[in-house]
Length: 93
Image (cartoon, rainbow, N blue to C red; front, side):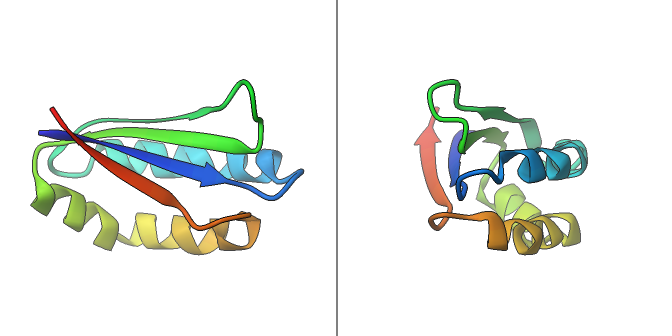
């Protein structure tokens, strides 16, 4: 088991648009095989930054998640909103 922290840095003023996309990705990802937990929170100090906190059973589960249509559609939808590439960190538990 491990945790992923994914940091999304948005262009100024895009937080509201990003928030509209969150329910679908969070709901779908929580049903992915091997997902233990999945949430996304807005940084209280920087409202243009969101942090995904995810726990996965193994690498295969994460790889399968990244290949899912719901993830690919989400990634394509947020691309124009991003101020920087998505930063992903893997933490072994």
